[in-house]
Length: 356
Image (cartoon, rainbow, N blue to C red; front, side, top):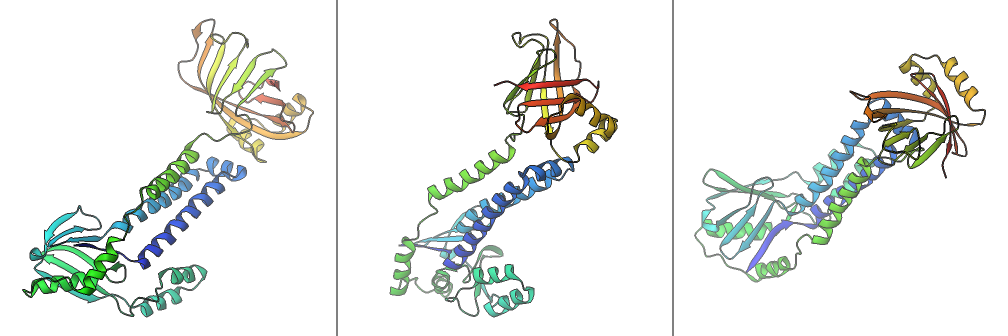
């Protein structure tokens, strides 16, 4: 005969509550940091790693909740006991190896609810709803078992089921009595046999959610230039912006193995972009406004982007010995088909038409 001392419904409800809260927080933070105006602000002010860290913490808590559902745990099979402590590897002993036990009371429901009430607030009410269990006793008990001076495991009737039945067996063994499976114990064993292990499907679903969020979080985010190509009106050159944040400029669109720039780009769109870029590149706001107004009379949204070039091929020769960064500022038409920009390094003005 075999049975488990394992998590009861009270603990499972609390863990489920924690999983739901974690998923809500992960989704909420992910949605928040990808709002266009928020995303720009937190990246430019260095707050992005903080939000990524918060999402990482909730992902870890979500993953740990599955582990906490299965530990601590005690498996009993005849005279053999398999102990699964919370943080240590499993151990297999027999009833005769347990030499002593300690029993002390856990905090009562009334004490815990008093603490919750003292904290106040809606969140505490949710905690009270989550932690309360009408079927639990007013005073719970913690049992700790030892082999000599070595602590084997501690279990609580507040979070575990079948604890009293297991403790009775231990007491019988310590008193030299024969361990008997009474009718009460047999019923417990039958119930315990029906306790299903954590379904593999649920584990895969949880892992899939974590991987999906991670992939969406760290994947390159699409912007207004992502996946577009542009033809310059003044010289016919071609500029391509890929979704992986790489960018290529070709002097001749029909010749892609020479006379080109290759690098990566980052877009900034914000009402304060003029002030930010002018400070960074040492150009006055008036100069920027005049350049853009001269380059494009059409209405549109302000756009600024920086390009880090890693390669510049000219006449078959590499021209760069190290990466170079160039800033651009301009206006993207409301129809997203015209781009008027000024090179923040050279002051050159370019008008591009989107390639269909």
